[in-house]
Length: 359
Ligand SMILES: Cc1cc2nc3c(=O)[nH]c(=O)nc-3n(C[C@H](O)[C@H](O)[C@H](O)COP(=O)(O)O)c2cc1C
Image 1 (tube, rainbow, N blue to C red):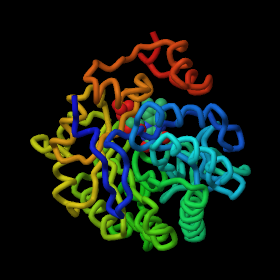
Image 2: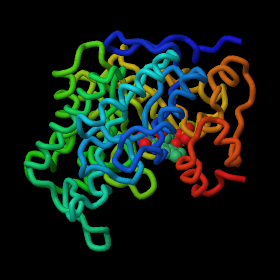
Image 3: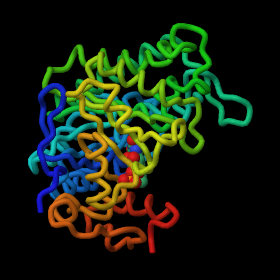
Image 4: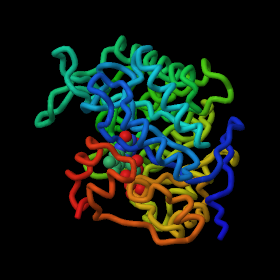
């Protein structure tokens, strides 16, 4: 059976992917303690390229040593990591799936580094784990770090990068009106709160080749403990990023079937599609398991879907579910199944700690 999910995807810069089914960025703790790519990491990403995913996204990857948020996290913060990225690029892209590195800084949620507390747009409030307010020098340094990391991915042969502007990490902390209470040029108005993300986008776009894909992941609205995000502000930020040269906008929805919180009669996907230029792909993610659920996102106007848990459970989702129309395997699952499906021990243990994941 044919599905529109299996049609090629064209990015705004003209780069293409063989289909519209992405492996979502999935933190898996499989990297070496120093952030270097491991055999398990390479095997995991290649396994999903092998299964027919049209784009493979890496786990969130820190761009600065002080941006690391967990042990076993991938790094692109220094030239010594480039060789590992060459391997990831080669091994996934040999199977036909362009590799996108998800570039990240943990901000307030980073691990303490060299004895110093992490930093964010504004300092921690009472009752929060301690973090400090960024100096302008720290902001300028992290911008340089995002740009340098993108150049390393390009040099390593990766297809592109996604700026992680979602889920309450540094770029999202600056966007948030509650986490960013600065009164200088990096806070206050939406223009100022969006400045870090926009300058990262502009700075990367200015130095990479036109064919290198540069996109961004956004959380359109608050979710869980994440506060200070507003749907209309997120739409405006996405429009600015389009002006700044974004090749795609990836919206992280957690449950892509849901309407927006702010306007419960409206779905986020058509809102973003309508706000953005027609040639700018909008990628939708969250709770997509079946072919019908994925195709429904395309009907709403998304250009592609990104799968997280269903990609963990279904290495061959593009062929077995999208093409053959079979039902996806679902949680709960077993460690033995996950090991046989390309996950290393660190990833299996990480998932085992998630309620309901294992039988
Ligand atoms: C184990 C795990 C790790 C994740 N790591 C990341 C990450 O590194 N970066 C990110 O943007 N989202 C991350 N997410 C969120 C997923 O990319 C996805 O948006 C979310 O799981 C909802 O999609 P799903 O229902 O298809 O899993 C992670 C989710 C899971 C389950």
